Length: 225
Image (tube, rainbow, N blue to C red):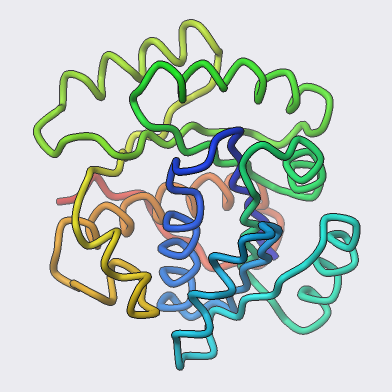
């Protein structure tokens, strides 16, 4: 079972929206997909209430029961597990990181978001040896240079590798959850769908590299061509 934790010390960085997109991508790829929602605001669970499809499943869990919830998901055949954490909760972030194969850190290209990476770096040094990747989120679609400059800044100052795929500001990301959909379901041929597909492919590639001795579906990272 692949286990991904999405962490961040601020709200509004796109953790839940990104997680929903990845979990649905896994479901569309034929994997039994589960989101564990640790956020008291229950955004992922509320999204599931607006949805009719069973896959992905969404389970709300207190942080204190995370390990047991992960085990239950695995016992019931989950293949792709995504843990959605609240902002401003180091305890949730730490527990999620401890059970994850890969950690994702969505941040917006703003200094207040970027500066939180110092705290996440310190937390992960204590909590987990899992590889962590920053995902730049909320960029202007034409801001290629800003994306490149921000990636270099993050890697140089904070030491985190940055995903080669970034997510742009698009109406689909806001509209899809209100309908109980992921971006790629709301607008299958849209740019947001393309971004999520490429991000999912990159993450699956990284997970397969980490778990090459397990029998898991393998997909290659595509550059969008």
